[in-house]
View (cartoon, rainbow, N blue to C red):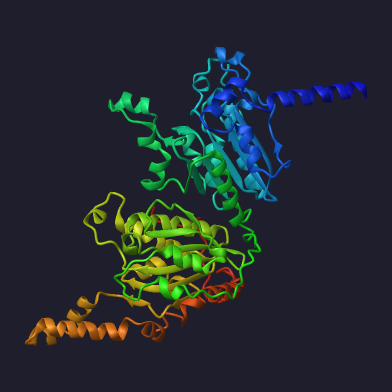
Length: 537
């Protein structure tokens, strides 16, 4: 027994020695940049005392270079599992204090294993990225040292590239970009469901500034080609912009609180203390009856959802379309809303792409969708029509996503919905389960100028006062058709509701829709079998 106790004592001594990662100087350097170490990040993510590390004893493969003589604890990555707000979560965290967190065969194998286990066990995965790219020594290991590990040759991407697509739609996957991330090291974390980037610290690009200069002879900065603000405002690759490691981790924990652990579960229900029958008189004043007047849709959302809390995603990208999570009577819902405060709420190719991906995520994880509509339709813009991304192709994405989704979907016409805006925000024929309209709803399939010219062509051509007649006809068409009562008359809405009652109406409808069956279970034609659909990417 004494011998065993000595061995255990030695075990704990070795574990304690390896736990910090790099040496004291490396840790101090990390702190001097305003960054936490990998272990400190792990401690902040998990509930105290619940984290269990996997693979603390791993060592890098031998390369035949002098680097083989250095001790590199864990091969620069912490991998393990524990509880986040009482729910099990896997994670990996690059350790920048160990050879700048560079990615090697063993490290990638550990990350791949965490992804594989998360997927098989139905547990979300959080990746904390802080890596100086691929380790060059592994790429050029000398003859006799290049051997495969878990099916991945030295320097190969292997499993850590393979598993994110397999995990997609099975378990939630969140990437926290807390440092540099170039080339191959960026391809895997960008495939996560959500990305959280830290301002002025995190950089994500295919090439680093020195490589770009060598090829193009142009001097660029990390911020210009891969900064967090760039990916938040311009590329749309980042979902949440933060200013510290602590803020990133807190946002990650809150985001997880809205999500189920896997696709077979429903999101957790939280007691928010907000009365499901609560009404709000502010909704009578927020939205101007004059359709030409803008307002901020955030205020409408805050008046409807539990405690006014809206967890917005991609807030700086395509702000004319709002997406994010909220709760209604404690249950998670995905909010998709036009925002007249930006671009008058017009739909463009960027907002369409943003909206479609969010809809598909919610559908993957059984999260009901609420659409709040106030849009004049597509942005009439020459640059949009000629854009290389393709306006029509991007416009088809949310239409495709709505029609394909099977979760409960509710559309609320707050004010305008013109032209193809109806298709972007969902209709009954596209599978929306409930449609409501405010008294301010103005639904137009076609512009009234064109409608008057087409319907009364002969009268207009023979009129003595053409302009006057056109105006009268347009006004008549508007008074007849631009009302929620006409919409109700043609079954375009289930009911016209008092704006103050929006919250209780939504909650009551969601309770009804909680019994909704999957397409192959309900009456009517089932969805055809297929490997997968082909959304217009």
